[in-house]
Image 1 (cartoon, helix red, strand yellow):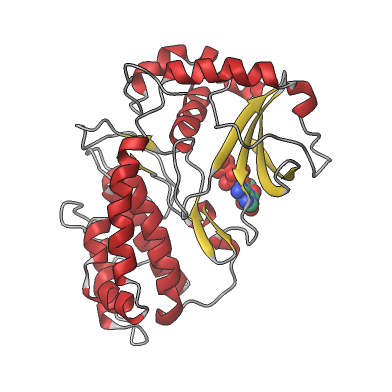
Image 2 (image 1 turned 135 degrees about the horizontal axis):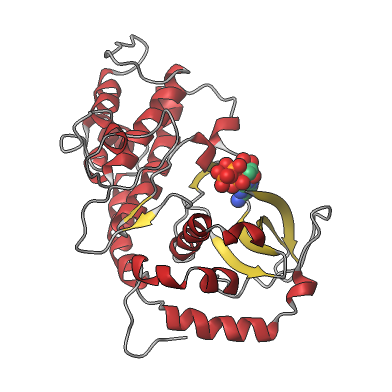
Length: 320
Ligand SMILES: Nc1ncnc2c1ncn2[C@@H]1O[C@H](COP(=O)(O)OP(=O)(O)OP(=O)(O)O)[C@@H](O)[C@H]1O
């Protein structure tokens, strides 16, 4: 559906990953809908364990998403052997990213090793093509998505599900990194692994999701607290969780009216044809100081979908 190329923001002298999508594909309503939802959700996110979407723009043929570049590829491409001592670093970083999403009422719905990128040892969640932002009074949803082997059982059945589908998927990812295979139906006791870590993993892989821990509860479990203390990180994480409450408010500020106004400003500043990159070239110029916006091609093709995007509320006086 897309191609990702390495580009350089000449103004900032910064490498970026540019996702290029053929606009013809947006004629398919379902693809246009998920593309628009991906951008709407991703453009508002700001956390060190989530890949940043710097900006979006388009020309006649392509839609471009300029993303934070992660220089170590995906978690699935990592050859490192994970054991109890080094899994915590990966585990808590991905958990921090997921917890940030959940604090903002977003469910990623496709947590798996291909969707975790690594940049200088920092793990970052990417690919918001399956993500959903629930309304603030909405707890459950029912759309079926995700990747085989990582999908929570409640998503495969007919029942509604909530943010705990991401906790299940993370449980599978961590289990797989430690065992080089996915969890089996029966509980397997692993002599090499700390008992408290095994208890945590099986709790994350509890089938009835009402009994499965949330991200917040994972932080509070015995193994996590012990590892946090060992690394003298406990206070830091309490502090970071307080900060995410403020982000909750920030994420609601932007409105569709804002985007339309900003689009006009952006398009009057850009010669989009000049900004288009050739897929054979690895360098292009982009002004990453501009906030990401919803491209016209998606705006027009999915106008009827506005109501179903629960990401924003309209402030009386939108701030530019
Ligand atoms: N921000 C990034 N930094 C570095 N590499 C990236 C970045 N985004 C993507 N890539 C690389 O490009 C590859 C393709 O990315 P893409 O998002 O198209 O993944 P995909 O799983 O093939 O796509 P999709 O699931 O959306 O069809 C990834 O596997 C990864 O190696």
